[in-house]
Length: 196
Image (cartoon, rainbow, N blue to C red; front, side):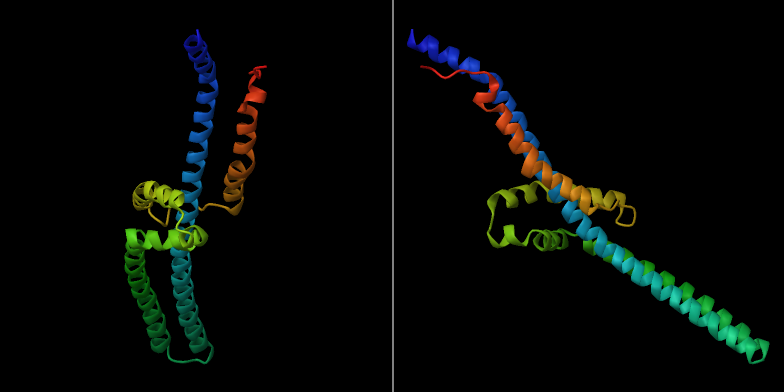
């Protein structure tokens, strides 16, 4: 008779276990997404910084060349000189753009390498790395290859930015919502009664 009661008690716990499993799966999924978003944003922002440095360099060169041409026209320098300055500026900026785009492609390959992604993980999760947190190491092992593949497929230039608000919302889910769900799924909220 005791075995029957034990089996019945275990069967009655099944819905709670199912709910707990779903909450645990949600917890793991949010951790994966948060790490994916944080590391991807670190890589994307470093690429974007290089891209804007290149654009500023190109724009500055174009403005400098245009200014020199305008100064030449203002000072009544022979038109051949002014035309030469304009042509040199256009060719120089075009060459610089080609050179910068090839360097940017190299930078993108380097930023999406396993080594550089691991460096980004270490930059974005310094506490967990210094504590040798096995949970975060296992999450990183699960995130690394899919992240690398998605960055490679989309390209860093087209990869969408992750806002701080989105990261905060994911962290809020981990810190507030998942514990709240666990409390709601606890036996006192699940309708089970204590034995007397």
